[in-house]
Each structure stands twice: as C-alpha cells, then as structure tokens.
Amino acid sequence: MPTHGVARTSWQGTAEVTRERYIPQVTETLIRGRLLTAFLRKKGRFKFNEAGDQLTWPVEYKQTQPRQLGDGQALVFTRKDHHKQAGIDFRSYYAEDLITHINERQNRGQDAMVKLIGSKLESLKRSMTDFWNSQLYVDGYAAGNEQKLHGFGSFDGNSTTVAADKIAKPGDTYGGVSTAVGAAGGSWSSDLTTSPNASIATDWPFGGGANGQLDSQYDYWSPKLWNWSSNNWGTSGTTWQDNCLAVLRTAIEVQQRLCGSEGRPDLFLTESQMCIDLKNKLESRLRINSPHKEAMDLGFASTINYDGLGVDVDYGCPVNSGYGLSLDNLTIHSQHDELFKSWGPEWHTDRLAYIFLCIFLGNARYTSPKFFFKTKNYA
Image (cartoon, rainbow, N blue to C red; front, side):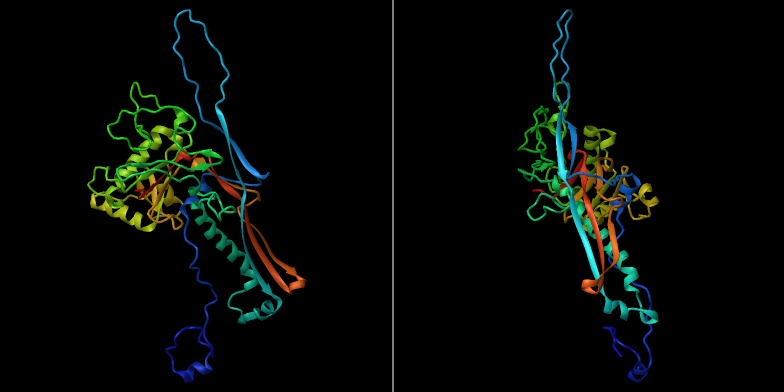
C-alpha cells in the first residue's frame, strides 16, 4: 500500500494487509490571523456595490488666511479655490480551480477523505483572503503592479535622506497628487538648530512658535516617514531596538498634533523581528506589555498596547518596516456586494469539468497620506 511520504513504524507484514487510518479533516496551515482586516471590518471601512471606472474624491488642501482689520478699513473679497481632486482606478485579482468529471467520480463515498467539490470554493476564498491582505502593502504604481491594489507602498516613496535625519523626505505621488512637502505652497517654521530633514530645511514636522506659521497646505498630502536608523534620536544607537520607543512616541505625538484626534493612529503593524525587538525593549525598561483591549476583543490576544496604539505583527509588512495606520482614513471599496465574489461549482460540458472562481474587484483608498506614518532604516 502507498505510504504517501509518511515513514512507517509498523512491521511490513502488518502494513500490507491493514488499511491506513486517515483523519478526514484538512489541516489548515496557510491562513494567518489578520488584525488589520478585523479592525477594518469592526469600523465599517468596507464599502460595497461601488460603480464607475475610478474612485475620485475632493481634497481640501488650503485654508483661508485671515487678515488684520483696522477701524474703518475697507473689506476685500476674493474667490478662493481650496480643493484639489484625487483619483485612483479599480484593481482586480482572481483565484480559480477546476475538478474534472473523472476526478469528481473518483472522489466519492466513504473513500473520499476530503469532498473536493464541496470544499473547493471555501479553499479558494481562504487563499484569496490570505493573499489579498498581503497586497495592502504593495506599491500599486510600480512597474508590473498596474493591476495590483493601491497598498501603503503607493504613497510612501521617499527622496533625499541622510543618517542624521529623523525623518525621510516624502517624494511620491498618490491619486495624481504629489506627497512632497510644500508642493502646493505654504510655509513652515525654521527655528530648530537641526532640521529633522536637512534637505527639507524647515522644522517639519515639528516647529511652531508665535512667528512660526504652520500652513496646512504645506503637508496636506505628506506621510511621515520616520528614519529609525538615524543617529539623532538621542539613544547613542542606530538600531530599531535602540530607537523604537523614541520613534513611536514621537510619531504618535506628531500625528495627533498635526492631524487632530481623527489622525491619531489605531494600529502599528510591523514585521515579526521588529515587533519582537520592540517587546524586548519594553521588557528591558521593566514595563508590562499590557494587551490592547480592542484587539483582544477581536480575538488577537498577542497585540500589545503602547500609549493607546495597538502593536502587532503583520506578515505582509516589508522587512525593516512598520506602519502607523489611522483606520478611519482607510476605506476598502468593492464593486461587488461582498469583498470576494465567487462562483461554483459550474459545469462546463466542453471541458467535462466543474469550475470554481473567486474574484476581487475594487481598491483601497486613503483619505490622505498625511494620516499615516511609516518607519524604516532610510539612511
């Protein structure tokens, strides 16, 4: 009898006349828990039955500048254009399978350990779910990615950054709009002795003061790209474990200050080694890694709480990188009445086979990149 790749420990004489005992249950090793998807579902960030060939939305990038008014002074009224339009197209993925008539006839009765025709569609959905979650990090504008999701990588490109810079210089385009600071005008204070990014040469994203005008249009479309390998974090180190607490503390405070309560991040997701290093750092400070209540309620007991931020691993996250996510500013749009539309089994006489199909048609849309931050060893 066949051994199916499993080493036998019984006497061969017994094995030849004894039927193998199979456990009629598939061991699922492919699907990992996805905290991000669970949070998006809880917050109602999935939109279904979308139409059209593109997602477009208005972006208010500019505020009216108040003027001084003297007694008896004549008022001056002018029209002001405070909006730009951003847009992305829809993207699609599919997963398929096929069972021939011969396979279906063979896979029947008590000898069928797994009923293929009855389990195939659910298997496709699980495959699509696992794959789709990893796509939330891709650059949908990169060469070869023209049909892929607009993941976080679609707006996190950077330009000139050196080792002393705490923050990388945003240098990307998302929705047809530049992420560079100052691309739409505006001004920012420049009073700090050392600029967070020498190439930008202002205090951004810090700064302020009585004479420090921080114009909203200066960074209305700019994500914060924190350089965790900077030698300027005051820790005398340049590793993630050296600087992780300083980086996260700074990122959280800057997001809340520049974006308000709606921009405070809900989650910080990173690759496994960075998450381990962060937990080790917290323990070395004799700090209890308390669980994150919202994540725990969703079944993710390993998610820890850091200053209100849920911190955990996401297997799609690129190496050496972590993302701070404001989920009220992320929407998943689908053109179907569910996230993944599926068909099957459908009989095709010309192929003497049943076919199965699972498809996603939609995209991820970000209100503005400014509501998100990333940290990486940029220089």
